[in-house]
Amino acid sequence: MLFLKVRVLDIDLENLVLINSEDLKNSQYFPQDRVVVEFKGKEVIGVLYSSTTLINRGEIGLPQKLVKELGVKEGDTVTIKHAEKPKSLPYIRKKMDGNKLRKEEIFAIIDEMVDGKLTNIEISAFVTSLYINGMDMDEIEAMTIRMAETGEMVNWEGHIFDVHSIGGVPGNKYALLVVPIVASAGLKIPKTSSRAITSAAGTADVVEVLTRVDLTIEEIKRVVKETNGCMVWGGALDLAPADDITINVERPLGIDPEPLLLSSVMAKKLAMGVNKLLIDIPTGYGAKVKSIKEASSLARNFIELSDRLRIATECAITYGGQPIGRAIGPALEAKEALLALEDYKQAPTSLVEKSISLAGILLEMGGVAPTGEGKYLAEDLLARGKAHDKFMEIIVAQGGKEVSSDEIEVGKYKADIHSPIDGYVTRISNIGITKIAKEAGAPNDKKAGVYLNVKVGNKVERGDVLYTIYSDSEERLKSAVKLARIVYPVKVEGMLLQKISRF
Ligand SMILES: O=P(O)(O)OC[C@H]1O[C@H](OP(=O)(O)O)[C@H](O)[C@@H]1O
Ligand SMILES: O=c1cc[nH]c(=O)[nH]1
Image: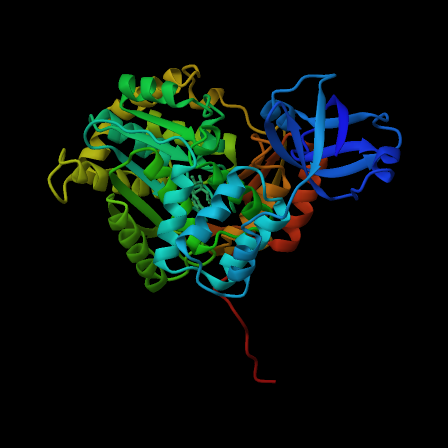
């Protein structure tokens, strides 16, 4: 037990607890021990580190996150106590060994994750064990319910719609068109999104270029009441808080294991009180789902899980074999989506086609269009500017201001990548384009990304610009160009494949 005076550390190392090396030496603790920091009955978990210069004797350095959770201020005296091992550690180990977890074991993992009792090491082990050993539907149902119940739950009157993509394809900015189309038809669509998981821009990252996405539940209810829709970040709302915790571990590992994919998406929908849901499953080479067969199996899992949660879900298997549209990266994607709302004839066909198809299904699910007619009503709402006006309403209601696509700034440094030969574009690598956009700084640098000048099938001449890389950092741009030359994501092939001579 140690009694120490608080020093607030201006550092975003969330669970760091810093004490003086001398104090540590005279205590029964060791570096990287998990400790309980206690103040007036409140407790938080931290990981202990020491320093001889950064902190004085008798003091304890706490990061903002722990200071806020404890409700302490500079100079308050707190107690450090030994923290026992988390209860759920053996259950994580059980999944690592490939065994089925009982409901209460899954509840314990999610509860301790949300209570900050698990470090990123244990969370990574859990996420990785799901990647390797998976879960059955009973386990996924339990995890989904607990992920939702450990956060705020919202309920509304009547039918509440949503659309959610499993992600995994660059440029997947469909939601910025689908939400306003559906909302402009009078259906309620409070869309929640995560930030990027494996891509260079999640929907929350793209929308945040134009307006706030970290709305409270009360603000969301106001926005939806005013406009029928919203496009917000699940992670900000204390909505299924375990979702963002696991996504923060998935991102550096570049994985999105199916049990988490199912529970992460459905937990947000369950928490948001959605009862009519469309799931987009981009499928193809370089997407999260490679084949129609795999997509159908995932779709059936979404529908089974949804049935257990009493959410009416339909799934759309969409083309994911190359980026959607031409823009990859938050600002570039916001610009392209806004252009499509302003004048869809000028926008990439793949983006418009995907968006009106998905919106059309939702309009039919909502009974505002007869079966088979939804897509045409969606196109009409887009063509007549109804979706654009609704989008502006939502952006302003969420705290942004009216803006036109040409006002959206992109990276001040750019580099064109040219075609080395005459020929045809035979493949655009999703993974390659994503890697380059992220190397340029996306999604943290919102203005970074890639703009494709060509799509698969286009004829190109030697020297034509295939794509342009943008960044707000000259250094990152250079590194992205270097990577581009190695990855070579846009494949150009001539018709003359090989010449065979007599000799
Ligand atoms: O592509 P990656 O980053 O793996 O997946 C994350 C993206 O997929 C989902 O898309 P949406 O919210 O339906 O637009 C998430 O919300 C996020 O935007
Ligand atoms: O919201 C999402 C989308 C894809 N994968 C997830 O885990 N969550």
